[in-house]
Length: 485
Image (cartoon, helix red, strand yellow):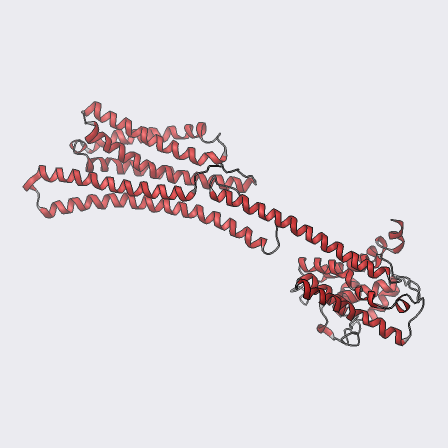
């Protein structure tokens, strides 16, 4: 469609342009001027598609824009040469005084058309690259967009200046020829009309190309900004489409390389974090009578509860995918404070006395304090916050009778409330030196009794809704199953 508009515009503009700037063409009738130009442009339009299929379409994607530009400009130049030769042979118009003016006018208009059609081709290439998820490798010595814009501006200004000069020369010749038969006012009106015609042709073409460049630039910047903004949110499975053989293509490649390196480094840090968590949690477990499978089960209980509650209006603002993953990763540190409990109490093969239990309860605050020190030294982040919350509050109770701070209701962080249910359930179904392992049904009965007193009622309801999932986790990660592995 853009090509059709350019060709129709040329069929109207060039005959009028020829009459206004060339005293020789001025001697012909409008039909004699228009027919060869329109015929040649019509033929040119018919052959451009086969030529494009031959020269442009088989070319690599990064070469198509350049080939499109040169093909269109060459066709306009050839048409200008043919029309120039036609006038010279048929009417004897001189080459310098007439032929070059037609060559200049038609080629100049072809430059605008070729630039616009090439930019449209560039957008088509970008669409294909984005749609098919392919990429291009910019040339080492590419032609920068900044130079393209500077070149276009220079050519557009030069065309405008030269056309004005041609008009001035022709009008001076016209004034000399007509002499006193034309008044000064009539001459002024005629000259101003010609200048207005040139501006009416050149200015819209120039603004159109500027708009095309703006659309191309806006698309590139939007892609770049979109990817970078999402990367800052922690999404690393993204790439900027490498869709142009210029500095923006190179920029996209460097951006993608940067994103890949950030992704790799983040994954490496996450693995290091996970190893550290499990190491600390396992260290705490080795000093306890409980097994290492306890931390595997409880972190999965926490995740199962959080996944079920993420659509609950009370929990939805906090329980997104990232938060649930952080809760899952930090849950194993809930009892890390036990490393500070004396062995005589921690490893006692029996029920603790009241005095010993007071000391045992300090493990929640010990774990919170240790993680708070690490947080101060290493900086606050979401993982450290959740780990500290879980360590400090997983023994708090909904009615405020828990420890260490006696928090009540929603004063207890969601992380601590989730861990409380998971930890108690696992303790109930597990064998301890002071009790046998309870059945799932008995454990569920005890937790139901603790609804509204020990536990957040909504979390208890969530456990009831997914108790089959809890049983499955207990079976897969049971102490015997883990020992067999």
